[in-house]
Image (cartoon, rainbow, N blue to C red; front, top):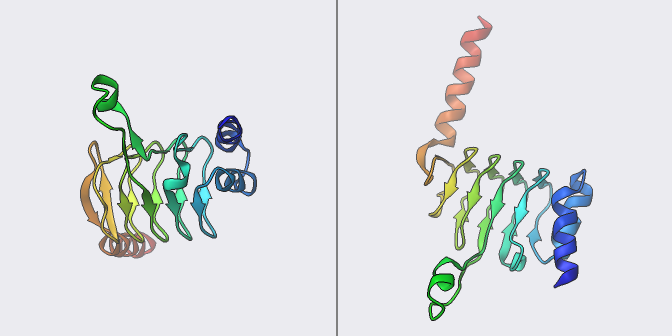
Length: 155
């Protein structure tokens, strides 16, 4: 447990992904290829083995991913600690300062806006934002708008 705590602190503060990601993996998190995890990302301290991050995911600075909730247990010890795995599917983006709660699946190619608190599963190709995070758009539609806007600006 002490080793995992040391690895946790080192991973959060490592200067680059090529150091950071192996440290998170050593703690038990499953992390795919071509993943970017920014400085200060908190991947569950007590149960990191419940986190799966698939290929191509990017996670912004200061994001928090938790796989357990002991709030009810603290005020009523007969209530068990709630835990659940977190899965972030391929090519998803998690914005800076976002929080992902236990038992959540982030769909493939989804975008979590900075500062969002994700309390429910996010469907593939969906943009969510806010506290709690709600659907604000579709990735394909947003990309199309960006492409159209850049064409207009070039003229």
